[in-house]
Length: 104
Image 1 (cartoon, one colour):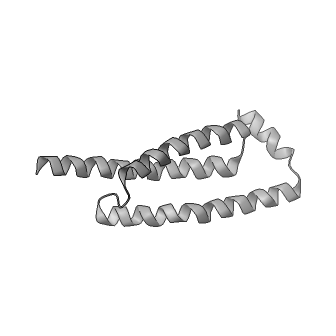
Image 2 (cartoon, helix red, strand yellow):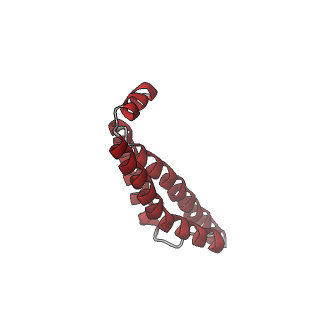
């Protein structure tokens, strides 16, 4: 797979690589909304979104990561992989807070 990714990179024109750079920048801006939400959840020590939101996010993130790996699209691979970390962390908060409530 790495060979395929390297071959893909060398097959791109300068214009394509500029667009890929723009795509990474756009993906970073999009991801920042999750970072802001993540910081809010970390400070609150609980998820500030409904639980089902995280299940949909994880499902969609895993499938989009698989799709982007198949398409060898580094912008979406990085974006989806980073998002999955945040989704899983927030789901952890949901589960921990449910356990705390059931103990109380």
